[in-house]
Image (cartoon, rainbow, N blue to C red; front, side, top):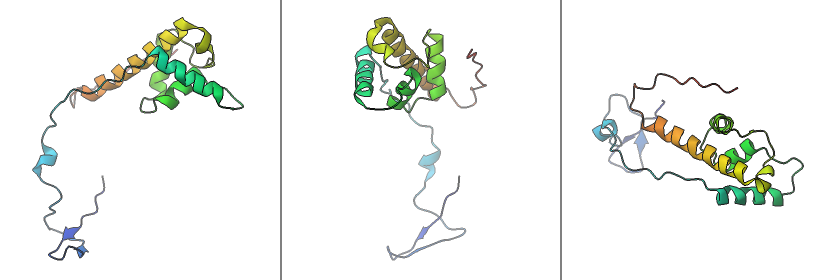
Length: 141
Protein backbone atom coordinates (compact mmCIF):
# COMPACT_ATOMS: atom_id res chain seq x y z
CA UNK A 1 0.00 0.00 0.00
CA UNK A 2 1.32 3.40 -0.87
CA UNK A 3 0.32 6.37 1.23
CA UNK A 4 1.06 9.97 0.41
CA UNK A 5 1.85 11.56 3.72
CA UNK A 6 0.84 15.15 4.16
CA UNK A 7 1.66 17.07 7.32
CA UNK A 8 -0.80 19.70 8.41
CA UNK A 9 0.80 22.94 9.54
CA UNK A 10 -0.79 25.71 11.57
CA UNK A 11 -2.09 27.27 8.36
CA UNK A 12 -4.98 25.02 7.27
CA UNK A 13 -4.31 25.77 3.59
CA UNK A 14 -0.58 24.95 3.71
CA UNK A 15 0.22 21.23 3.44
CA UNK A 16 3.75 19.83 3.14
CA UNK A 17 5.25 16.42 2.73
CA UNK A 18 7.20 15.49 5.84
CA UNK A 19 9.55 12.79 7.02
CA UNK A 20 9.62 11.71 10.64
CA UNK A 21 6.48 13.70 11.36
CA UNK A 22 3.34 12.63 13.15
CA UNK A 23 0.33 12.36 10.92
CA UNK A 24 -2.89 13.24 12.73
CA UNK A 25 -5.17 11.47 10.27
CA UNK A 26 -4.19 8.04 11.64
CA UNK A 27 -4.29 6.83 15.23
CA UNK A 28 -4.07 3.45 16.97
CA UNK A 29 -7.77 2.76 16.39
CA UNK A 30 -6.76 1.78 12.86
CA UNK A 31 -5.10 -1.35 14.29
CA UNK A 32 -7.83 -2.43 16.73
CA UNK A 33 -9.81 -5.54 15.83
CA UNK A 34 -13.06 -4.68 14.16
CA UNK A 35 -16.24 -5.31 16.06
CA UNK A 36 -18.27 -7.92 14.30
CA UNK A 37 -21.77 -6.86 13.46
CA UNK A 38 -24.62 -8.67 11.84
CA UNK A 39 -24.40 -8.28 8.10
CA UNK A 40 -27.42 -7.98 5.90
CA UNK A 41 -27.45 -11.15 3.87
CA UNK A 42 -28.93 -10.63 0.46
CA UNK A 43 -31.43 -13.35 -0.35
CA UNK A 44 -32.07 -13.82 -4.04
CA UNK A 45 -35.60 -14.83 -4.99
CA UNK A 46 -37.22 -16.37 -8.04
CA UNK A 47 -39.22 -13.17 -8.52
CA UNK A 48 -36.07 -11.05 -8.50
CA UNK A 49 -34.38 -13.26 -11.08
CA UNK A 50 -37.56 -13.27 -13.19
CA UNK A 51 -37.45 -9.48 -13.26
CA UNK A 52 -33.85 -9.66 -14.52
CA UNK A 53 -34.95 -12.00 -17.31
CA UNK A 54 -37.80 -9.67 -18.29
CA UNK A 55 -35.44 -6.71 -18.31
CA UNK A 56 -32.99 -8.67 -20.45
CA UNK A 57 -35.78 -9.70 -22.81
CA UNK A 58 -36.86 -6.07 -23.27
CA UNK A 59 -33.36 -4.94 -24.22
CA UNK A 60 -32.69 -5.16 -27.90
CA UNK A 61 -29.36 -6.93 -28.01
CA UNK A 62 -27.91 -9.05 -30.74
CA UNK A 63 -26.94 -11.77 -28.32
CA UNK A 64 -28.94 -13.04 -25.36
CA UNK A 65 -26.97 -13.37 -22.13
CA UNK A 66 -26.15 -16.70 -20.54
CA UNK A 67 -27.56 -17.48 -17.11
CA UNK A 68 -24.10 -17.00 -15.58
CA UNK A 69 -23.55 -13.63 -17.28
CA UNK A 70 -27.00 -12.33 -16.33
CA UNK A 71 -26.48 -13.35 -12.70
CA UNK A 72 -23.05 -11.73 -12.61
CA UNK A 73 -24.31 -8.51 -14.18
CA UNK A 74 -27.00 -8.23 -11.50
CA UNK A 75 -24.82 -9.34 -8.58
CA UNK A 76 -21.41 -8.08 -9.67
CA UNK A 77 -20.01 -8.18 -6.14
CA UNK A 78 -20.02 -11.97 -6.48
CA UNK A 79 -17.28 -13.59 -8.54
CA UNK A 80 -18.37 -14.81 -11.96
CA UNK A 81 -16.38 -18.01 -11.39
CA UNK A 82 -18.03 -18.57 -8.01
CA UNK A 83 -21.48 -18.12 -9.55
CA UNK A 84 -20.53 -20.57 -12.31
CA UNK A 85 -19.31 -23.15 -9.80
CA UNK A 86 -22.50 -22.88 -7.75
CA UNK A 87 -24.69 -23.09 -10.85
CA UNK A 88 -22.89 -26.30 -11.89
CA UNK A 89 -23.11 -27.69 -8.34
CA UNK A 90 -26.88 -27.20 -8.49
CA UNK A 91 -27.23 -28.80 -11.92
CA UNK A 92 -27.69 -25.59 -13.92
CA UNK A 93 -25.87 -25.12 -17.22
CA UNK A 94 -24.19 -21.70 -16.73
CA UNK A 95 -23.95 -21.09 -20.48
CA UNK A 96 -27.66 -21.73 -21.15
CA UNK A 97 -29.73 -18.78 -22.33
CA UNK A 98 -31.16 -16.69 -19.53
CA UNK A 99 -34.47 -16.78 -21.43
CA UNK A 100 -34.74 -20.47 -20.45
CA UNK A 101 -35.51 -19.25 -16.94
CA UNK A 102 -38.74 -17.70 -18.16
CA UNK A 103 -40.41 -21.02 -18.90
CA UNK A 104 -38.73 -23.32 -16.37
CA UNK A 105 -39.69 -22.74 -12.73
CA UNK A 106 -37.34 -25.45 -11.45
CA UNK A 107 -34.40 -23.87 -13.29
CA UNK A 108 -35.38 -20.51 -11.81
CA UNK A 109 -35.44 -22.03 -8.32
CA UNK A 110 -32.02 -23.66 -8.80
CA UNK A 111 -30.57 -20.39 -10.11
CA UNK A 112 -31.81 -18.52 -7.02
CA UNK A 113 -30.33 -21.28 -4.83
CA UNK A 114 -27.02 -20.99 -6.69
CA UNK A 115 -26.86 -17.23 -6.11
CA UNK A 116 -27.72 -17.68 -2.43
CA UNK A 117 -25.04 -20.38 -2.14
CA UNK A 118 -22.55 -17.97 -3.74
CA UNK A 119 -23.54 -15.27 -1.26
CA UNK A 120 -23.07 -17.68 1.66
CA UNK A 121 -19.64 -18.76 0.36
CA UNK A 122 -18.49 -15.13 0.16
CA UNK A 123 -19.80 -14.33 3.64
CA UNK A 124 -18.15 -17.45 5.07
CA UNK A 125 -14.84 -16.41 3.51
CA UNK A 126 -15.17 -12.85 4.82
CA UNK A 127 -16.01 -14.08 8.33
CA UNK A 128 -13.09 -16.53 8.47
CA UNK A 129 -10.45 -15.25 10.92
CA UNK A 130 -7.09 -14.21 9.51
CA UNK A 131 -4.68 -17.13 9.20
CA UNK A 132 -7.38 -19.81 9.06
CA UNK A 133 -7.83 -19.75 5.29
CA UNK A 134 -5.64 -22.49 3.88
CA UNK A 135 -6.96 -22.67 0.35
CA UNK A 136 -9.92 -23.90 -1.58
CA UNK A 137 -10.08 -26.92 -3.81
CA UNK A 138 -13.10 -27.09 -6.04
CA UNK A 139 -13.90 -29.41 -8.90
CA UNK A 140 -15.51 -27.36 -11.62
CA UNK A 141 -16.03 -30.08 -14.19
